[in-house]
Image 1 (cartoon, one colour):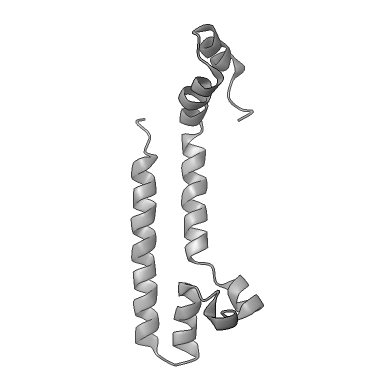
Image 2: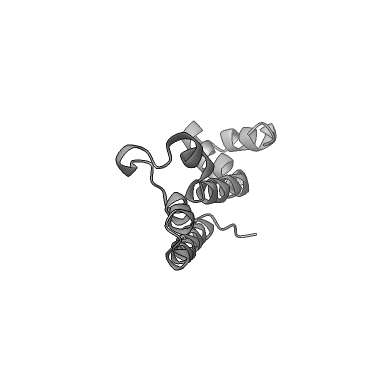
Length: 111
């Protein structure tokens, strides 16, 4: 937010914009690309989280931290069910693509 020129905020203030209007109509549009990058990266990373679950809890008590990536790993290497593991990963990729597609359509720029 420090990279946004102060002249833009000053001109919005001169035009009579309230602080909320300056945030909505000046700050958010100028930060849209950064917000999109962070949202897509965080969504993908959270869906694919595996290492913390595996190293800390191995699925947790009563499978409380049993995520899809851990389920795919467990199916493949604990139960030797590669077909189920591959199906889980393909479905996970489809879910990620749908969620990221929704994020991209919502935050699409008109450039």
